[in-house]
Length: 308
Image: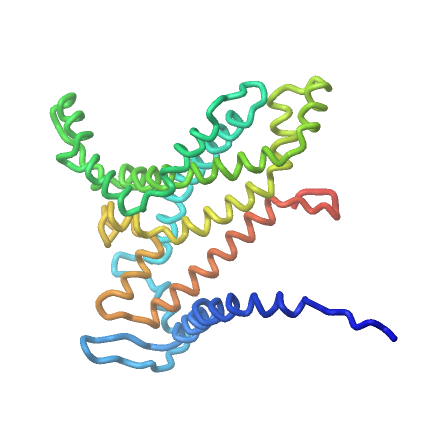
C-alpha cells in the first residue's frame, strides 16, 4: 500500500486569492474601464451627463490637435514633465550614490551610520504638500529668501514667475523628498556585494575609481535599473508639488504644467471622462516605452555576453 502524501500547495493559492481579488477589482477593472471610455464622448455639463457616445479616436486626435497658438499642449506637458524629472532625478542619483559609497566605505569607517540613515530618510516621510508649502513660504515675494535678496540688491525676485526658477524649485523639492530613499537602496546593494571582491581588487592594485567602475557599478546595476524605472514612473506622475507651488495652470504660462496636471484639468469642471481616459492611455504608453528603453539600455544580456 502506498502512503497518501499531503499536499499543502493549495493553501498557498488560497492565501493569495484575497490579494488577486482586490487587485482585480481596484486596479484591473478601472484600467480596462479607462481604456474603454477613452473611445467615447463622455462628460458632464452642469447636472447633465453627456454620453457615453462612441467617438472612435476623436479624443486621441483632439489631444494632438494644435491650440490657437499653434502648440500641442500634450507635447508641451510631456516636455515640462521630463525636464523637471531630469533636473531632480540626476542630482538624486549622483548624490545618493556618493553618500552610499561614503557610508559603506571600509576605509572611512564612519560611526553613527544608523543615525545618518535616519536623518537622510526623514524627508521621505514628510508629505509632498507640506514640502511644497514650505518652499512656497520660503521663496514667495515676502518670504525670507526674497528679504535677503532685497537687502542685497534692493529688489525682489519672483521665483514663481520665472520659468527656470519655478522648474528648479519643483525639481529641488522632488530631489529632497527622494534622495534619502535612493541612498538607502544603494547602501543595501553595496553591502550585499561580497567583500572578497573588493579585497581582491585592492590586492591587485586597483584604485578606488577602478574598483567603483569595474566592481561596484556593474554589480549594483540591478538596483540602479530599479531605481531609475521607479523614479521615472514617479516623475511622469508628478502632480502635487507643481500643483501647489505653481498653481493648477502650471505658471508661468504653463511651463510647469505636467501630464497629470493636464489630466486633472479634464476631471474638473466638465469632468470629461473620455478625454481623461485617452490621456491616461497615452501616459501609460509613454511610461511603458521609456521604462523599456531604460531597462534594455542598462541590463546586461548574460546569454550573449554583451550589453544591450
